[in-house]
Image 1 (tube, rainbow, N blue to C red):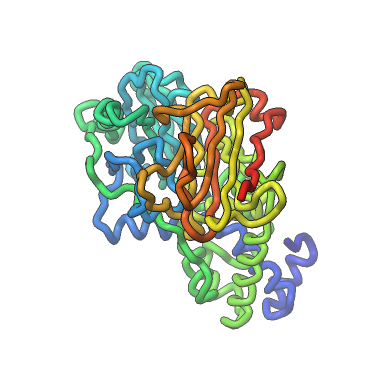
Image 2: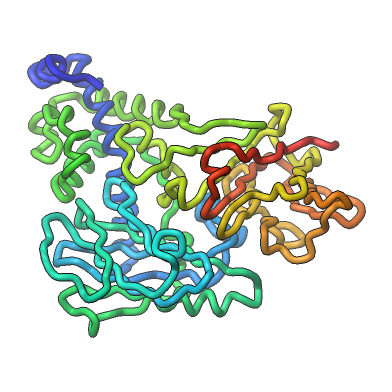
Length: 433
């Protein structure tokens, strides 16, 4: 990112290389905002209302088109429009069940959570307030402020087992939204049975660079950067984003495309994960990420990356020797006695095909987790999981794999201190055949 005198030069001579570099920096900064804009446009095209939850009441299956979904929670989402005042989100008592409602602004900053880890899981009211709002909260309500008038609310509600689905659905159905001006009479329950899982597909931003910047310009007008976001945006001011990009920056379409291509390549190459025994994990996801490149690299397959304190994900596409995972081989993961993932809510090991989707198999088993019935422990108390395409012999904990390439994600919700510090190490994926 250029700065100082270089910015002035870029503005004075917009067709020089400095202007292209500045456009590249602007693309990196703007990718999260453009993603949000496109997701919201998809919702509008489907005729989905704002300030209304859309709730999927079944767990993900191979027919689900959301990239790398979990198979532990039922999902839901709502687009909150704060341009007419705050909205109030109400939840019933979740007891000891894990659930979360994650609030994300238009720049993909995580504003906060309602749910078990953040607020104890009891009943509550949450007022989501837009920029500059001053007013009185309902008695007992908690306030969550947003610097943008558009907020995405993502819900996850744990299903403890097949017989527990109805109870999870009942809690999910208790989530309501109302404008503060009409609260409590105006509370609306969510639309249940909606196809919430397929509403937020992976987006591909490559293509017409000029159109990308025109889109970003309009979104900056609609959701102007404030606070910390304004600080990150300030060096880009000479481009005129939000003030008429096309009038301020005369870069030809080829230069704009080159800037977008370079930005996407840098985002793709960015790696903030740590690797241990083939498992990659990002310990650094937090509510506001000041580094534009780091933030743009998150959520590339869909919104909703959690802060580390809410959940840590460990991903493996290689075995312990560094070779790619493939159904042509068999593998094991062995958790020693007392060495299961130390997560306060739940852990879940899920297998995905190379296309990021769940893999159909004879058992209809897509994961092994802390709720899997009939798990077999070894005589020494360890838990051994066999991962293979062909059914293994004997009575084992089998996680079926496709014939070709695949990858694994171990999710840990409400990770304890040893997970957050990196002291706990996930056992390696070891090839056995």
